[in-house]
Image (cartoon, rainbow, N blue to C red; front, side):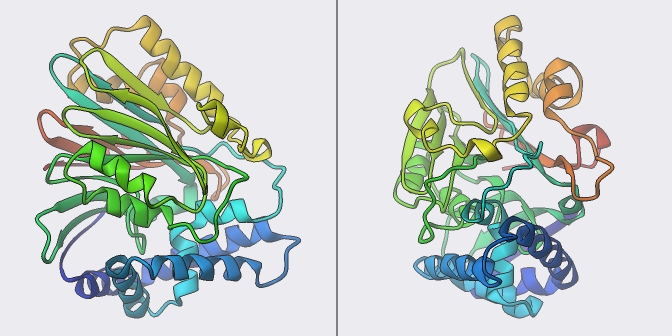
Length: 353
């Protein structure tokens, strides 16, 4: 698993990132541009670039993150548009024509509190060709008292992570009809959430900085696990766990009845309900009252009905869906695990925060 430690001001952080992974950034950008074009098959030749440029302009409203993004592109010798396609690939698909070939890709997120600890984790499921570009990233931004440890991709601002205040952010992608070209690239939003000092503050960050398209975010700290769903124009809370004995989980379909009206059903993941049902069955039949971090890893990521259903091994198709990585956080013990591929590949990196 690739690793990088970045520190300094936004320009310096972006430059270090872009220079270190220049070759990988070009490779992933080529892959994602090619895949994204497949969604714009009957649009004008420049439609993909037009939307990506709109998302670049939206990012300009957040100067520190834009400075970092610009420095990554400059150091990697890549255009801002191509770097945005790399970063915002999942949302850009929702601005394209209807795709009638639904895929299996989509992340699964689990969060729970018992009397002993607060645990959250997610699989990051994506096209298999993204897996080699998975990165464990540590960030120490100048002028900030918040350090970040994140799962990301080469060239990407961040996928999921946890900060030194003990606030974590996990994500699921959803396909919706209510998109917003002026919305924030979702990975930039993850980075903004990871500057929060409490889970509640992280949720407020989402409420005031909506992404371009549909997502679910699980934002947590030691005392709370909060799940919110968004479209490009709306955000609603679907779960708030603040007492021991509570749990939440999410796959890739809307749970809120109002937001469900905006779901693009033709693009809904073919496995989202299967994965949701496996997690639902687990929590109906298994106790998590004494669950430890090791139990959490085993039951949801390694072995058993839940893990076997939500973790997807490498497919025959080089761009087919697979679990490309994941992140697991124990908020009580302040320990984490980032992994590349499926958990059982044992490409693990353990850390403390």
